[in-house]
Image (tube, rainbow, N blue to C red):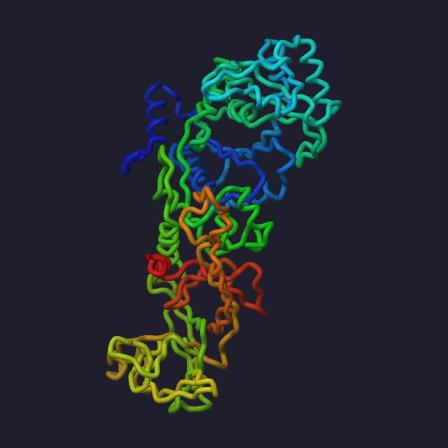
Length: 559
């Protein structure tokens, strides 16, 4: 392993284990999502952590679905998760499911019952909760805690066979109702659920709880290091207790360790809250480009390499903190600057007429695709008398600091000629409908004519009227107006929805964009990075803005 960079604390844990005699060949990691929703940017960091460790140490990484709650899990989410992990550029060693181990977990539960370490509790969930006590007061034993082994086995079999109603019984581990760790006060291991499971169908009527299934699944798969987010730190004691009951000394014993979540500003990542955004129509689905889901980021035009660079740059830590979304945007700008071809698109078009250009002439100008990529080549753009230009690139009169087009002053048309503003036409309301200019025929970009070398302070982009293609452009911005919408304890996170998070406009783009493939990034010159939406088609081009060329949010929203 290369030591060219400092190790994070997770890697220090692994390195210490290796120095203590741990067999490097025994290293194994896992990413264990629950298939009850779509993965988000927080999951992306966990994916990059675990699969990154696998690459760093040459160790296998399993993709294991924690499918223990059929009431909320669907095959749709399984498929989406697999697509997201693959899209990020990672390959898993084994595709596993907690449901693969239902029979083994059930048999181990019977062993615990036989050893007097588990019992069936017939109280309601409310009664069980009321007996848990508080962090400063011990809990109260269930009246069913001392049921005989025979009765427990019989009831547990009835639960498994479907003879019991939901909520009528649970299986609890018999640990310590006075433990200072509330999770150790006889935790529930199984509950009765008569729900169809997406993989096991109707075979099971009992389903294991997370704490029972997770550590034992790690053990079955011989995962060496089970990395969880910080909220699972109190669960580690229970994780170890369950392993104590079934661990064979001849087999590897997994160890759980925790790292802090990296929260992203101006968004939420709770699946429940993301679901609410979808259900209440704030966004148009899990893959809405404003969503922090991996599918949303993909549709918006974020690249796998940018997300991996973001995850690597923020690292892992022992304390939670809030990462400014501007840092993620910086990572995607850095990546797209190298990848994206520069193209012409006019988002707020006004007609520009070159008065002294021949009426019936069209010429083709050479344009470089990407100055950051010497292998990107060039393309030809049509140029004619009638062009579209940005309305904001013109003022009838302006001071010396204005470097775009105005009456009597010159600018260069990108890849084209130097022009001088002459006059304007207006409608009865005073709105400019046409801008008239003249061009210098000797000033063509790239020519050896001295006039072409003449310097002007402004350059503007354009598209030719008769060759331009109509496009719908969606300008996306932050979904929330505040950094931490979750932090509002007195209000609802929905109170902070940004009403300007999406602006849909009609634009004119250069003709070659009709051939653009979905997912191929482009830079609209002087505007930002865009990608063709998956729902676009040749008859209706739809572009999503991935990110602007610069971060304008901070300037607009700084008091």
